[in-house]
Amino acid sequence: MIRRWSAAVVAGLLAAVTVTACGGGDDGAGSGSDDGKITLGFSQVGAESGWRTANTKSIQDSAKEAGIDLKFSDAQQKQENQIKAIRSFIQQKVDIIAFSPVVESGWDTVLKEAKDANIPVILTDRAVDSPDTSLYKTFIGSDFVEEGKKAGDWLVKEYASATDPVNIVELQGTTGSAPANDRKKGFGDVIAAEPKFKVVASQTGDFTRAKGKEVMEAFLKSNPDIDVLYAHNDDMGLGAIEAIEGAGKKPGTDIKIITVDAVRDGMQALADGKINFIVECSPLLGPQLMELVKKVNAGETVEPRVITKETTFTQEQAKAVLPERQY
Ligand code: GZL
Image 1 (cartoon, rainbow, N blue to C red):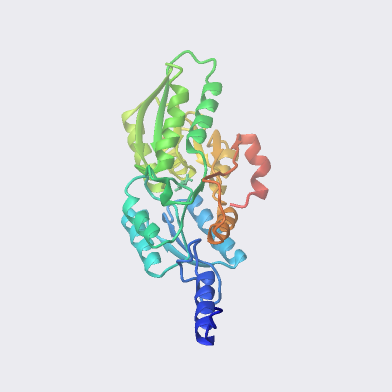
Image 2: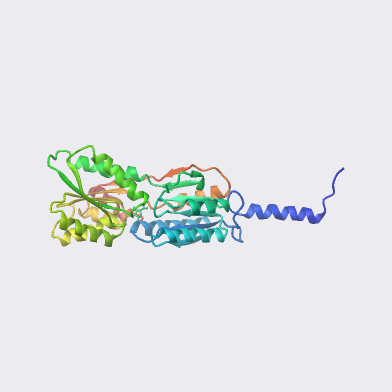
């Protein structure tokens, strides 16, 4: 017997399919925005450094370019603010959530809430240490251990002929953050092979210029013969330069400086001879992030790990590339 579907039933079925298709996320959970655009909720760490400013610009410009409706939140470097923002995005039924976790731990509960709401999550820039990788679709960002290794490799070459102890001070990034943990590990693993390298002081400067200057002033007071500064980002290195000059010493000469990021101000100090080597960490994650957002929203499978391409710069190389730097 052929059942005759009433017009009302068919219309209802069609309406259900249409709503699901327009919903965001690969499970059709998000509400999407009325005009059919993908709605992306993004929780940013803060505005602590030149790198972060460039990263925010890349994300905002790329979302506009991709026609993605961006809800952007600045957490002012506080994890509780990021958790609040993610909960708000869940309440708003965004299609996708992306964020740069200020620290590695303490995300499982809120990420499970997003998973239960069928809203896919993408990690950008920094990783989380949760063993449950089903809590996010992919992680796009640098290999921070490799960045630390590159910094260590340069130092080993620079001091290849040295026989006396080489006294190093280290300005670490935000305590508990993936870049701080991993840049410390990568650098430490390389220099551990040579006993002449001695880390005489290591402390967080929270990725900011102000804190970098403050901690470097303390290092200079308690360590009379510092040979090298390894700073986990340019901004702390630039703050330390102010402290070194304030102590009557020449940065880049009396104290050699290695930093990570390669933002414009850092590259200018490198070209001016105040920094000796910079390991690049690209903030321009926006275009790749938006591609991943579209794929995840369409229910496509994406690579679990997308590593950003980056290089290193000497003083000569900085002079050559400065004019064309985007950030
Ligand atoms: C690295 C990023 C770090 C930068 C800092 O991907 O998380 O945070 O190195 C920034 O400049 O504050």
